[in-house]
Length: 336
Ligand SMILES: Nc1ncnc2c1ncn2[C@@H]1O[C@H](COP(=O)(O)OP(=O)(O)OP(=O)(O)O)[C@@H](O)[C@H]1O
Ligand SMILES: [Mg+2]
Image (cartoon, rainbow, N blue to C red):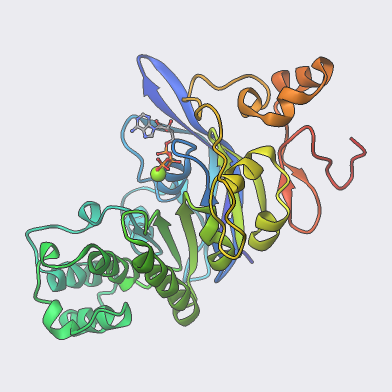
């Protein structure tokens, strides 16, 4: 049974008396011990989707529809979106851990590293008798040299890569079954990025966690993730096993994204860019939201183009766990 099942999640922001949808009808699942990557350009709704999973959205956000079913450690299936108060706090940072791009979001500059990890332990694992020693163990686990010394340090006394490791230590302190890593390596240089991704892979193995990995970088997903969901303008437009997505992408948006990033192991030719920008919520084109930037749509006869511009394409099952939302791509049970 899956660890997480997200169904038809729709989140809108209140702006000048209107509700503008940032995430629309998003559905996906995450298996036990699986790494699902969420990719897409800036503003596609990756972070809003992640924050919604534990109801961490700002006040101005409204969850208009959806279920977020999580299998808890006690073997209970809960709909996180219906929880409040203590039950919700148990899930947040307890069953679902978060790592963000910016250490400053999670690390408090005025407390020692050890105090911050110990606090997370007191909150979520009150059975731990000596939180300080456990904090040292956690720092060791995430590859911090001299953990017994570093546990006394303040965040600003560490490099960006080390701060990121401390954040991971804090996030795994509660032994979450799901770790949501929202661009955990974007602010780091390439070698440190690779180390942090290796660490996540190792933790997945040793702790049996599932991970949602948000990234701009399609180049790293085939090495790291099991499956990939590609988001565009608040929707999932393609979902497939990682290797298949990189080697045989179906959606024109995914193809364009792949052409725009150097993929490890592939010859890095001249990189393309995708003309235009992701539309803002409230400004999405009718029909397929990618239609106004889509190279396929621009090349086809006007009658066919009308379909792209008027009818929203459903996410079709293309076989072998590959799903794609494009009128130009055939589903496995379709002739057109
Ligand atoms: N607090 C907010 N108020 C209003 N709109 C918001 C808010 N947070 C996000 N949005 C809008 O929701 C949409 C999705 O944003 P989100 O942060 O999820 O994008 P993202 O895919 O995570 O992008 P990035 O790669 O830049 O992190 C964007 O259009 C954004 O402007
Ligand atoms: Mg984001």
